[in-house]
Length: 258
Ligand SMILES: CC(C)(COP(=O)(O)OP(=O)(O)OC[C@H]1O[C@@H](n2cnc3c(N)ncnc32)[C@H](O)[C@@H]1OP(=O)(O)O)[C@@H](O)C(=O)NCCC(=O)NCCS
Image (cartoon, rainbow, N blue to C red; front, side, top):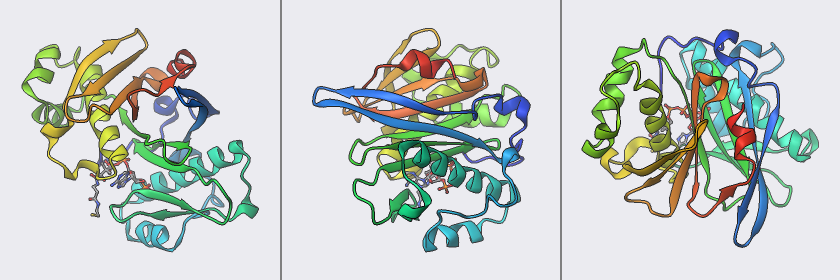
């Protein structure tokens, strides 16, 4: 969700989540594969962390960003992509660049074979990136959980369906985690579909949530092919991963502990 007045990667907010690249061990009936989750805070950017990786159209997008905090978040996202690609074994010499697809989604281009796909999200100065094998239809969204942002909470409530609202506790403070969780699940699905939030909100309705303590999962009424899994990095962010319904994360406990 876009934000004004970003906290710009306050270490108290971003915690230690950006330390590592986390490997998701995924499985489908057809076999196992890995996806790579990495975080970079705008705060940790160094002067030489400039627009490496950015292709021409991506660089144009960067140059059009006016808000300095948005610019830093963008760069943090590119650094997070680089971190994930390095962990996967790609190097600078592979000349991989980030481009933008027709609807604004990030697209990796390069001469190497089997280029993965990528999904990007930022919230309050922290960028999160998921790099996954092409064709696996995944995406992520990240939301800082702020109980004090009353207008945000109202905005989220305003797009929920009657059934979703019924599931949320009426107490706004208590309901903050489920509200941000719901929002991030919808936004993650919208990114997996590559259209973003240009589609009517009721189409992104969630159903059948299941809570497993430190992580939760949900299905989608109108997109039965997908589900979303949500974890709470640093206990102050909601991170949702949208993926095909039958894709399993075998090390979800490890990811939920971030
Ligand atoms: C995609 C969208 C939901 C992102 O929400 P947001 O609040 O701006 O911000 P987030 O931090 O969660 O995500 C931003 C990232 O989403 C990605 N993104 C943008 N459009 C996307 C799309 N259509 N599908 C998937 N991902 C997309 C980008 O990688 C972006 O990060 P980057 O600019 O650093 O590369 C929102 O921008 C949107 O609805 N866009 C609609 C698409 C659109 O208007 N396209 C214009 C051309 S038709």
